[in-house]
Length: 314
Length: 278
Ligand SMILES: Cc1cc2nc3c(=O)[nH]c(=O)nc-3n(C[C@H](O)[C@H](O)[C@H](O)COP(=O)(O)OP(=O)(O)OC[C@H]3O[C@@H](n4cnc5c(N)ncnc54)[C@H](O)[C@@H]3O)c2cc1C
Ligand SMILES: Cc1cc2nc3c(=O)[nH]c(=O)nc-3n(C[C@H](O)[C@H](O)[C@H](O)COP(=O)(O)O)c2cc1C
Ligand code: FES
Image (cartoon, rainbow over all chains, first blue to last red):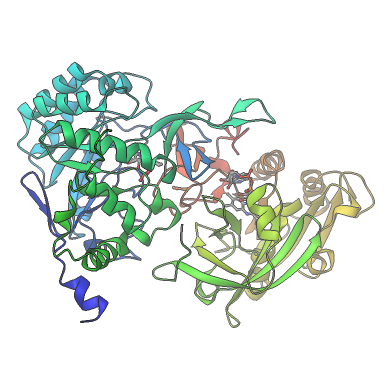
């Protein structure tokens, strides 16, 4: 058997709760638009799933520019949840997204607790495959960050959404907390089907010449390879302290990175910032992960999940 | 991040030629047939360097037959310094052509106003206009006579050309917007000459663009401006490159410099919110 035949004999299927994916690779929220910009160039059905840009009840104009700043091995962003609003999404974007042949995950962000439930309710009767609660957006002034860093609020907002939808509920956590496992447990208690981690780390980029922050929003969210070690540590910590599946992300730029997340406990992975630099990479990822898996003697990608063995303390 | 082999619209290109125009500015010719084939004036490419994000650079000209595109790059920081330091033969990953460029449709006469390195994208537009037999005027603005870029090439591009210099010593003493005003006043016929289908296109520093936009508005001549914004993806997926425009209700809305732009109808741009954009 050559390498290609061997890798195509690896089963890429993974499960996140009751939801099955052809492969573990999902496009992360905010770094893939609604798919329409890349669809002319790539076969989107190659992906396990696609997350939408964060959706809000009403359209949002977003933050004034500059919204992005380059950093060492990564970037800061303060887009401020620019999006057309849930209604326009359901009418104009979702039908096209459903034609891509990939699972669709709707990422939602509320200004207040009740908005999350309203958004989840509006998505309940649609064809989206899952609803991802963005409890971690650091760029919106009202509310958001506070919800994501308070376990009792995480539980409350998850439970409120659980009540209005039978869709798989994924809770995306912010890493800007001291005890990530407590946040994940709160989501679990609230009825989440999975937790997604991590979102961006709050950061600041400074312009020496103007003595001002580069971002008009002052601070922004750090993403890219720079945050991978933080993300891996958090995935492992959550894996050890919860029983619900984990979708891992943060700095994935190649197949090895994705498999490392799975070893730490992720059932599936998302690719964000890497798609901004190398838009073709995510489409090669499922095949490359399978190839590596076969080299290590695995027959299913799902077997990687949670195999990381910590050294014993001496 | 590894450099890519072309699938989709990410291409592996080679630098075919590099000419230094001055110690800070280079003309790179890229061997990139797929980019050259479909490039149109005002569009740009995203180039890889050893830095994390790609760098947006306008297409100065495209030779569809040879499969090459020309780029004019001014060193403004580490990424552009690295690019102008690249020797012929260097491989570079490129995405493009990207964005919406200048529209020459229904244009009877083209008046191109470029300031400094803002002249680069204007070159491509003037070359296309010539091919389309559109009457052309070029107003090229420089700080001083010593800082002219590609003077011979620019002289031969348009039917009429005016070089302006803030310091004097060229055709017109003053900035490019003042040169435009004087040019429009001098042409005795209807605004913008005799065709009635005149269009102004402009690229350069924001104060120049704003002044040109005001002159165009005052005379009722349609005007396309090429804008810059800090970008991440350059392909429309991240919403990082917002440009403030006025929507129909007169409210600020943000459009993507890389996707709806980089060329915008000047009358839609929210100029008051443009300061300090990059
Ligand atoms: C559509 C478009 C077309 C352009 N065409 C040309 C061209 O033809 N020739 C040319 O010399 N320059 C052009 N520029 C400007 C060029 O992209 C910047 O000078 C370059 O990105 C600076 O990178 P750096 O690493 O040298 O500077 P650094 O300051 O180290 O860059 C840091 C970050 O800021 C961004 N940045 C800094 N200045 C700018 C700027 N003016 N515009 C956008 N992003 C910026 C960089 O991309 C990078 O992400 C264009 C910009 C845009 C948006
Ligand atoms: C430009 C940009 C926009 C983003 N928008 C959203 C968003 O709308 N909702 C959300 O939950 N996460 C958003 N994120 C966070 C990413 O989905 C991801 O969690 C984070 O960037 C870490 O992964 P990465 O390093 O692979 O990018 C955004 C990230 C970037 C870079
Ligand atoms: S730079 Fe990403 S949308 Fe324009």
